[in-house]
Image (cartoon, rainbow, N blue to C red; front, side):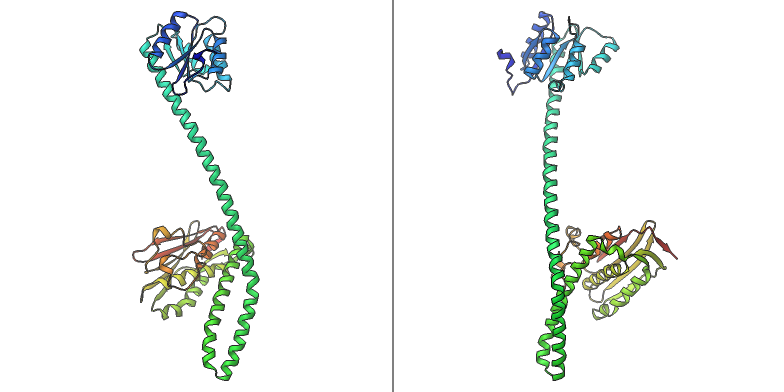
Length: 391
């Protein structure tokens, strides 16, 4: 192998193919004068072997050669996986449109017309070398991007597996501990009844917070188990045709005393009767969680408004308050399990209420969104129902 067959990796290599020594000399001198390395071949067969061996960055190929002409040489270069990506520029005296069409069909990227003008040859060669370099860079970046996508996908799958594992463990713990907690609560109640009969108010006052703590833990476990049922799709068996206006009205009525204790006005926008196939128990729980949150965060002597609307593709329930709202950076986090934002640090709860609302929305092919109200926040629960009828 000669030194011209060993390309400098930092300098582009051009393979020049021509059966005329004079043409070869002119082209080689012109290209080497433009800081390019050059290797040559004198016919099509030699060009095929040299191209596979040297792997040039570009090929300048004469068309009219004895034996294997330039068009057929180009076709065979493009048929070889090892050389098909190398750009080919034809050098030819053929100027007919059909000849150019034949060349482009064979796989060429450009033509230079004989007699050759060396400045034009050098300019076209540099242009296509730059294009090839960009294409190589793009392919490399695409490969790196694909590797990154695959890595992230694997990491996401691993994370989902971990999350599901943790979720299954928490569900199992909730299930196993709910019964002994219920027994503990029952024993505390029996003990408190006895203390009340004895008039032992001091001990009774100490046990009442303990009973409240037990109720709080049982509530957490019940919420976890409801979420587990929703995740598993078990709760779909609870779907039935329901009066949505009645469900929402009952929830508003239930939370009226709570609102009055906090000096909050709780009102409901008048709506028509609306029937849909839903899980009424879960939907009532979700609505209750939204109203409870709104009352907690409403201003003193503030307002909470509830509305129910029928849309073309489903049902929209909104609960609005005039409180501090939720920062934009937290809006996508508040429906995560156990997440509590800065504004909720001083309020009761463990961060499962909105997670349950989101799960209920998903079960009903819907979503929960939050919009700023200035002041306050509007939580919009949308559910999709194919079996919906407004009357």
